[in-house]
Length: 136
Image (cartoon, rainbow, N blue to C red; front, side, top):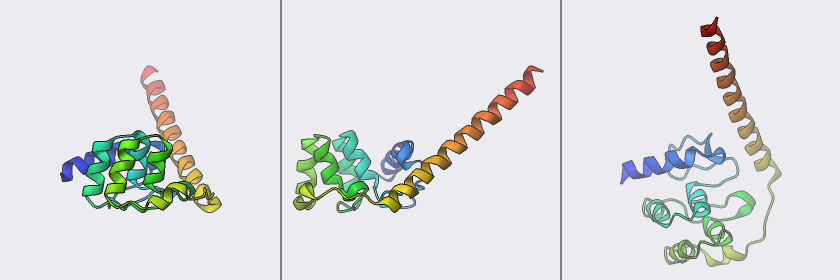
């Protein structure tokens, strides 16, 4: 199961929102407070959600807009995940929680994305310089 979790976290980490999250723990979050379960709930992957929950991920983690994974699953229309999370102990009152915009968390997230973009630009420039050098 540990290998499955690591592979799943690597898949989540390959997304822009989680690219800077090292995942030293299953409960690590991005700058907005989202954990891997938020991402999986957006994707609608019930089996991955079960794997994370059974491995101890925080069901009650508040992420972007103060939303829990349950709210994300509901907003994306993934009713099977909603039912599973409720059965696993997720708080149903979070389904109607008001949307809260955290300016500081958003700024941290945007800075993180900017750093990732800069890193990619540097890689492209390095590759282009290497290609130009080998063509000469």
